[in-house]
Image 1 (cartoon, rainbow, N blue to C red):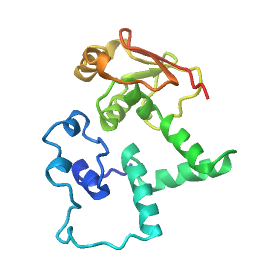
Image 2 (image 1 turned 135 degrees about the vertical axis):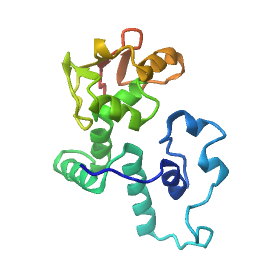
Image 3 (image 1 turned 90 degrees about the vertical axis):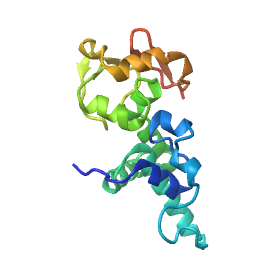
Image 4 (image 1 turned 120 degrees about the horizontal axis):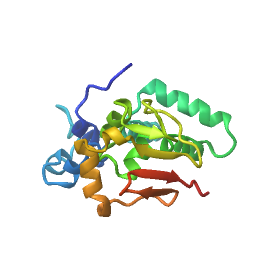
Length: 188
């Protein structure tokens, strides 16, 4: 399995936009983007010619980094989106939004997508009562996602339970943070 070995803060700076990859740190004054709002590198402050290709590449890279995907994974999602009916860009975003690690993050069980990915891959999450340890698992309409009973006392889950009032859950999710269960609605 491939892994990105780059600082998350450098990725935000490269895109010239906060991607909130570090969770709560991105909301504080310690955020690297707040201290250095320019592109990393020796020639960072040189003027850049922004072509259409450059803008498209930056948007693609931004989406990849936002969801924590590598190039091949992103390419496979794109091929899958092209095969489905509808507008390809919207279908692609629907596929990315319904990944299990992203749904766990949106439910508020983790402060960042990396932490949500780790919760899933370490086997702390169940889908319809069965343990799932694949972060790219595609969540379907009507499925119930919960934290396993043996994992309800780990630190990230307890912190998420304490900060339950501060999260904004999308309309298509229904979350019971007290019992650490989510029912998916997917109303379109």
